[in-house]
Image (cartoon, rainbow, N blue to C red; front, side):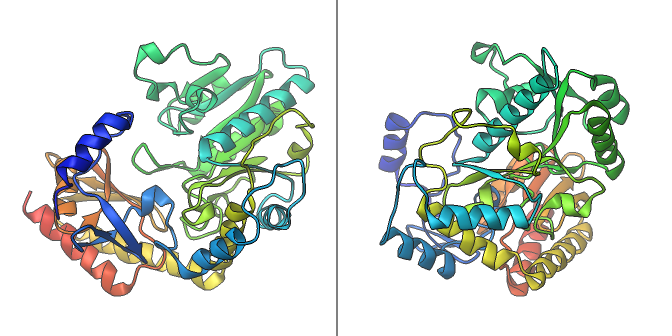
Length: 395
């Protein structure tokens, strides 16, 4: 690993708002599952830009789609039709809930749209003060609506107050969830698998209960599939492996294969809630981003690819569970949380892995998070397991 040029560091500190703590490496190129720094050092990327580069970096089919569309039309406002926008909306609807799609540019924006749908729908059925219920440690984004759904993440009181109308209950606690939901509930809004919290899977029992509570009260079941969607868990959408069909799902991250795009996808009924003027986005479903997303769906939404994701996930999980220093592996498909033995420091281990040419993530003191690209080869998977095992042995 080559340290970042000092001048670049100084310029970043001077001109970029200091909202991220960056690792001591600057990447200049990506190809497949690999990243390269300015000195040509090679890194195996098991984080994928936090589940964005799921088909690897600069996949040739996605690059070709972007180049072709960029040479024809890059932007036109949403006051007009474009073929890529309509094609993508139909593809997403048919692949999931069968309703309508609102396009945006990120996951938090998709979640803001879902919140707006839930609140308006609740008002229309007579709820005066609609409330959205979520689980503690869910992560829905950084804008105020999304952040208010997970207030524990807003640690600086100077950022407050959060928006009213949100309630969080302990994760996967069915009794607490049932106690929180009533006639005024607009939505139960949850991650199928908590990602930023460290990869924790919501139980089928609680998810089924959430669906029953929504049916009982008229609330909407909203599933945040921003990290779990687009094949990450071994099905195109994670909810397909569970017992409950939601009213709304949100997508972003891997949707554009590296190009920024988000989507709020609904059932037919929920798709009728918003009217002209209720919501909008200047750059949403721009032709370039929509074309990238169509190429991404062509690559991911194939039985053989989804089987490969499940197979690779099993290989990595089995290999990790054999290692000294690993207590458990949480997750599904290629969304894995590696729980370390007591006394292990995930941040220190993550730094050591980077020095050995492996990119991972330490979302909590006792866990690593792995979000490998779907195109990871068997040889690269072996290298990853060997590198993690050797780094654990040296801790």
